Picture 1 (tube, rainbow, N blue to C red):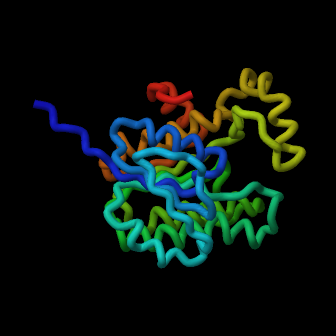
Picture 2 (cartoon, rainbow, N blue to C red; picture 1 turned 120 degrees about the vertical axis):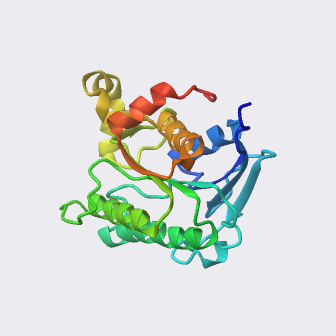
Length: 234
């Protein structure tokens, strides 16, 4: 007799963002997810029987989340900001500081939880990169792996295609969106759809998350995961 699949309690951080929003939709539709708790500075506006929303303003201090994070099975962490939209110092605070502080409280409350982390292509855990984004993401990756979670899945997408129209954060993103139809044909391993990335981040930590291992997925790897995951939402 096949053992029943465990119904998981999943936390999504950054569910009002582009990737986090898709992660929320996919998680709510996932048959193996019992409860989804979102943590962010504002509510998502989504109503669902499986959804518990927690508003938290100060990610520099996540101590107040200790109770919320107790008895959780996995986290999909999508909180972040765009390069060039803030100073290098603020980028490091948001990208590395907030991630590390959240992981500290999570590890105290749910030390066996799986952790799915939205990093980025070129992330440098050695800290030697000249790019502030690469150093900050690398610092966060290094800290997550050092905490001792049984499984940490690090996703390093290249260009994330927004799918739905939006106000692009800067001229570089406007250009990339404009040339995306050609870019995805010429350089398929340098692009990933936001909804596909979200599906992969949720599915890996839910379906594979109990295998107690840590993996880094580059853009090519993420695309391979997507091809193996059935699409449940549009």
